[in-house]
Structures are given as structure tokens and as C-alpha cells.
Image (cartoon, rainbow, N blue to C red; front, side):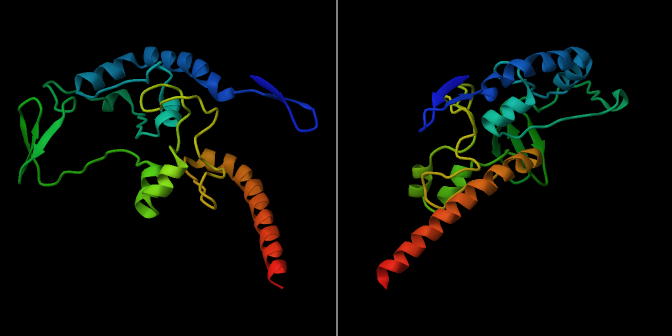
Length: 212
């Protein structure tokens, strides 16, 4: 929570809810891990590499901090993994041959097709590819909170970096996230973009007056 006065001396109090969100998420995921302990044990036995974030705050905080690929699973016990031999999920791909995948544990898996599900790309990276590296550098990092956790370096931002608001590059805005964020931030974006449009109209009118 922080307090500051506006230009007319009126006090404003800002509640930094995102800084507290992980505190409330941790007990939720503690309960999930306890309730579904057998499910997660079976997944790990099958070779899945599981984690709940640096501070065990779970799926949603990882999404806000890193925007990496996430998977939610819901299934009846009858369909839970029942693997009796060791799987190859918890290893790395070393190289590909013309008909197989060579893994870091020395095994080779025959394959006709290999699909890389590498997760979400960086919006900053897309800006570099689609516009220019100079613009991407000017904008800076997109997404993340500055939590100081893995792949979300500080300093603390208090909101998602460079999302749904003006950036350092004039007329460049970034919109992303899931449906609930799109619904929530569309209102913020609407009012912000109206203000920007009005400023543009004023500048356009002024420039026309200067040329007449």
C-alpha cells in the first residue's frame, strides 16, 4: 500500500494487490497438492516434471510472472497414468536424427514426426521481429511483475510490464493474456485510447492551423 498526493494536494492511496496475491495462492495450492497427492505421485512416476513455482504459489502466479506454457489437468482416477517402466519425459533432447530422437539419458526414441511445444513467445521478441530490434529495446520487457522469481527479474513493477497501456514507443500498445484479462483490461484500454486519440486530434488541429 502506498500513498501520494495529486497535483491539487488530494491524497490517493494505492493498494498493491498483485504484491499480495501469491500469499493467498499458496494455501490454495497446498490444499490441492494434499488432496491430489496420489495423482501427482503417479504423474511423477510417469516421468512428468512438476513444480508449483518458486514459492509454491501455483499456476496463476507463474502465468503472471513468466507467461510460460501451463497445463491444467482434470481426470477421473481410472484415467490417471499407470506407467510401470521409466518414461523419457524427465530428460532433455540432445539431437535429432533422420528417424529418431536422441535423449540425454542415452536412449533413442524412433519418431516419424517431432512437435516442439515450447510455450509462449515473448511479445518483445515479436516486436523485434515484426518492427525492429531498436523499437523492442526502446519498449523494454513485456509481461511479468518484477517479482524477482525465475524468469521474472526485478525491480517490482506493480502491474504487468508494458501491457494495455502506452509504451515508450509512440502509438505502440500490447494486448495479450487470457479471456478474463481481456474483459477486465479492455475497459482500461478503451479510456486510455480515447485520451490518446483526443491528444492526437488536438495535435493534428494545431498542425493544420500552423500550415494555413
